[in-house]
Image (tube, rainbow, N blue to C red):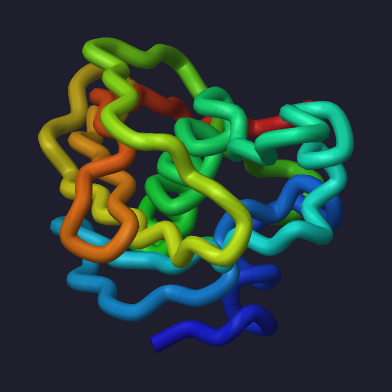
Length: 146
């Protein structure tokens, strides 16, 4: 549905911090499924861990949050610019179920739960194949930059 060129239009992030390679499905305002190809070339694998590379859990959460941001920008029919940004506002119930290693394809599923007072709440899951790797409830908010 969105290749890397479209993903980069919908995210303000750039290398080495882009955690979404492709959007596979997008149901406006409801749900999104995206993909992160995890390769040994990722800069964090040099130190996490030299003898057993594992994707840091915080970056798995970041991948889920970036997926939610893509859905949010799409929901508003907007693209990131120098005046608008979605900030991570909170995370609840984060759980890590399996390590994510080089060579894995991380499937990112995010469902829009609700919004209240400018805070958007999403239920997010990251899987490798049929195995759940991580899950969390993610909150974000859109802000205008003066």
